Image (cartoon, rainbow, N blue to C red; front, side, top):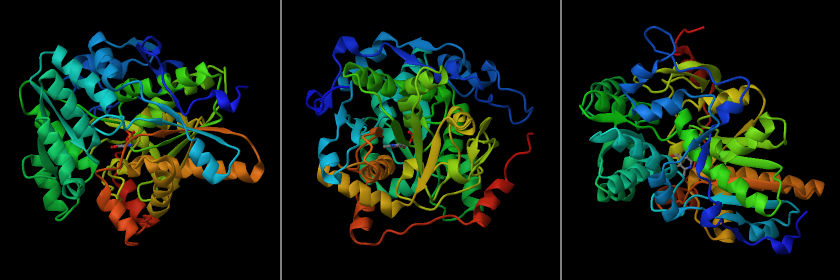
Length: 458
Ligand SMILES: Cc1ncc(COP(=O)(O)O)c(C=O)c1O
């Protein structure tokens, strides 16, 4: 084992050590994620059907569960070089403050203007839209990071970008909205009066603060009703996990350089893209029987898709215009309380991660937001970085695991994904600092109402 002194605070990769291919974990899964279904026929969606909504090349990636590696196009590699590799940081200061024998590492994805990992897939999706000769793309955004990332990627490639932003985030984060507009995006609060589905949701739920599920429906309707546009999604889909595998591949390359073998890998889970990307290459090793790891998904107690959801076919959106995905879900009609981790307020979960969880290859845990902000504040004061509320879910569980090591004396190596920064989340930090933050945990009855709306498929 490597001596502690040899491991720097930040492990970077040289340009020639950076991954040149994305890794598709589905290729190594014995039980593949269930296919997307056409909600009308209940048959697997064909490439032609998906091509009405998504870009052609991305449809190929979405449907391919056998090719293990995809070459990253040179233009995307060049864009990655502007902000990647992201550092893998050894949290020496946090370890010391916790007085734990655990070794803690975090992969910091907040080192770009979008402030999160979302740029890794945004540039890929915008690139394929451009290759197809499209005018532009539409999307939803929750916390705002994905919308910002896509705005940046579209500005770089000269594409039009229309963003439907979940209303509570739009109101809480006016500066995030302005960043998107600065990059040339058109930003609409969702639900809105601009789409049929938005008007319907507003009529049924007046005063709703919106959800990712609503915003997705609006963005899809906008794309399919305008020539030369396609819809792009920042999470949940297989293609997004594929692009985000860059996080895990870099992490693994950096750890391998120092012969470090993690015991526990932790990530927050909204739709599953950062977690899926971080764990993919490690999960591949586990699936192939080469190595073993513990993987932990962390979700908010207010939106507990994994820990209290059902593994069932469901709509990916509230307006029920998208294909059905088999996933852990709270029901597409479930609108979570206004938790401050906007990016984790999604009723469903990646079908790839759902299958892995169902097969007991990973664990999940839900945490309450005040405890998350306690961990965030501790982390900010010790490690210096102001974390996004979403990322802080992973921090909370990494600290808990490190404290367990303190009790048992075990020197476990913990790696967690620090997906982004929290500069636009200061309303949430203000609530926490003022002692005004509350924890909302949905009742069984509320969850039952969401489950009652699940489509009858099996
Ligand atoms: C900083 C940050 N972390 C995590 C997430 C959760 O998304 P995912 O589960 O797709 O990684 C988001 C989503 O908006 C985010 O902005």
